[in-house]
Image (cartoon, rainbow, N blue to C red; front, side):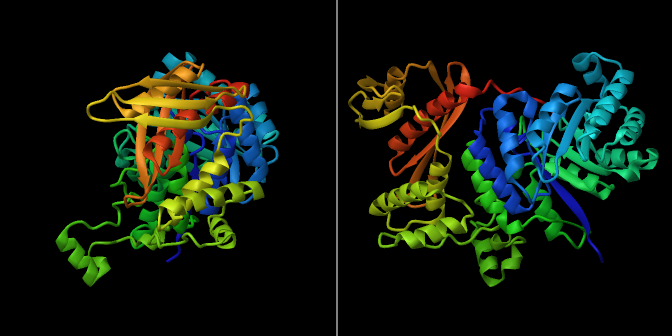
Length: 517
């Protein structure tokens, strides 16, 4: 029996990046884009070029670099947005535009304040305008699942005639159910006379926890492209998790006669990279890639798995690229073995970056007997995506005194972007607060801690500590991350990383504009 091919449209860099508190710089976005290309997604939405200078630069960099995956950018139905998107995307192997306009009564009345006729006219005119340059145009009916189906059929027919090549009907607010969503696509396929000239796409949000089920219901009703994000990130409750869609179709290929072109063994690395760079950790019991997905705690389960893994394990860890994290390198490993390991991750480092990574690796082996792949990946990604600022704050030294009977006190010596060395001491209710109060006193920006997380990389008491913070810097939310053997040093690194990222972005970028879709 032949399998039908489902295209995967990844919007981690656009819809995923709209998650509250996520702000990626263009080099981080490029690293994610390269990994998505390795994963084998068909289309990646690199951003919304007209929303900010920073987004424009990131989309352009990705479009000019990525060659094996089609790169697209989002645009509103205005000539300005379309022109800006073309400037960003014209260097792509297959430039593709993603146009959207709302079609639901609530959106047309209260947000757009225009009539249904004007919505049709604007969509048709802008698809025609974009068609002069873009070979591929996806048109999205924002809030399709709360729109009138007859009106949808009417507007879809006209935008197809105007030159759209993909029609996307998103469940923008995560409101629909599998049966309803499937019926809507069935109705559109039966009703729109020229529907066979386009591909149909679905885009589901997870507000009711049904994004993946809704996406699969759409596929069963003739949709040939599924949109979503890695780890299901995105605003509010997130988007359909692409790894869940792909693995569900693979494991249940007896039932679903569809497959994707994803290299499933790149899922874990894609997931790790995105959770590291966004600061959005994957919950332990998350389907497919949570760390408990293959852990069997119950004694009866473990006994069953030892006798035959198929008793309780329907997905092998290897399928999604989870390898038993074997001991890799230790104190006596040479630069060559280290370089080979970095290359196996598919990450390119300059000679200077490789030298710096090797030094940090050597420092780690002084404290840690067994250095795992995850440790090295953390070191390498930190160096690869460290703030590219010429002038930034640097931690020279710090000391924290803490005891049950004493007031926690931190002393910090800091080098400012102007090259001055400042030192002071402050107290706090705990050691991290004392450290952050001291840093805040030395830094001239206005700072407020919004969120603080501490995780270990791998297990064991000598594990690397990884800290993520979300910091309001002069009223703008920035996230920062840092790792070190010591939890306080990791915490200080993350705090300064957030401030330094702000310094870089304020040089060229205005705050991003959020777009629902």
